[in-house]
Picture 1 (cartoon, rainbow, N blue to C red):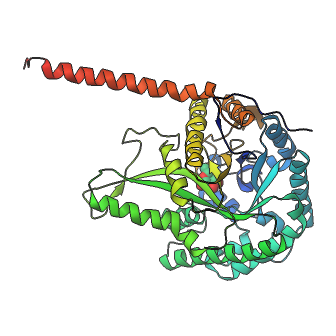
Picture 2: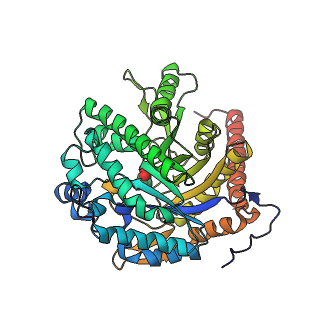
Picture 3: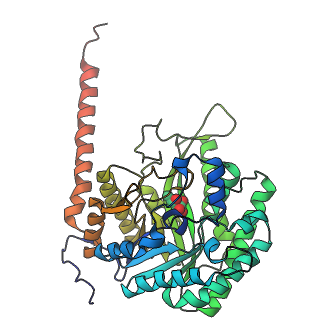
Length: 442
Ligand code: FCB
């Protein structure tokens, strides 16, 4: 089937030709019943029933239905992951029927002419790996490499891009610092070992894949954050920004330099450092700061996406491998898509080589320790019936895809709010002026 003709609209903010437009998911968050993963037992022990993944979206059985939606929504790419604990439930025992399953999954995307970006590790470990200490144990590097070699041999023909590992920094932060995820051990040495082992695993797997499948680009998905000071003139806040930017955004790339065919960027966070009574500044609580926030309390700050893109650009192609909003108010998702993509457009215009955007997420799903409450999906999932319902914002995204850019009709959406802000500002100024001239009655 020929691809749908691009809509002509000379006021569209055009993206580069062959830009990838898609959405992302990860196996554990959508498949359901991943009983061999470390998360599964941890949930039974530590989480109330409402926060357990259970059958999740049952995408393990409903993938064809979900992929039909992708096609209907006109996406030309999709990011998904495979679940190590299904494929190798016990050390060295590979389950062929699970490999067969993923072959069917990937083939069905290919039949729909969807470009496939496949993540090889997205946060969950087989129980037997977690029992030997997970990523703290150097052996895990070789186990992971063996798993990758075994599975890619079969699935490679149906994959266009590889992501080795997802968000090493977030994994370490949630496991060791927040201690909200399985495997929480809390030792600083463990943290360092985990970081170094994840970096080694990426490099090893990169070298293997690069040699074996030279035409399939390889990257890593990194959670990249935009940092800012609360007060412009606070030196202590400035130092915090420089330090946090290095640790969160650059350290891992530095440890793995030379092993990225592209940068995979997941963008969700804008962080402001605020000088406090303590020695170190604190992170501003966006909800207390009257910022615009998502249902998870994460600040909505599209300009930060422009900042991180321009900051990280150094000649390597960039794919935005995740970016999305948790909201039950779909109007906010419309606005999110338009304003964030507007920043991607600005970055491209200023010379950043952005080649694709994957909205998080295709469908509502299991948001780790937060359960099912956060609603990220372009498609709503009714968890009582597992029925899927396309949200209006999914159609806004489809409109953008059809134009290969942001059409004027949608841009007005931003225009309105800019105008509204201007009107508001004028009114406030006017009120202030009047106040100043009003005689004091007190
Ligand atoms: C990212 C994760 C992804 C999802 C989104 C909301 O940090 O990679 O699995 O949970 O956040």
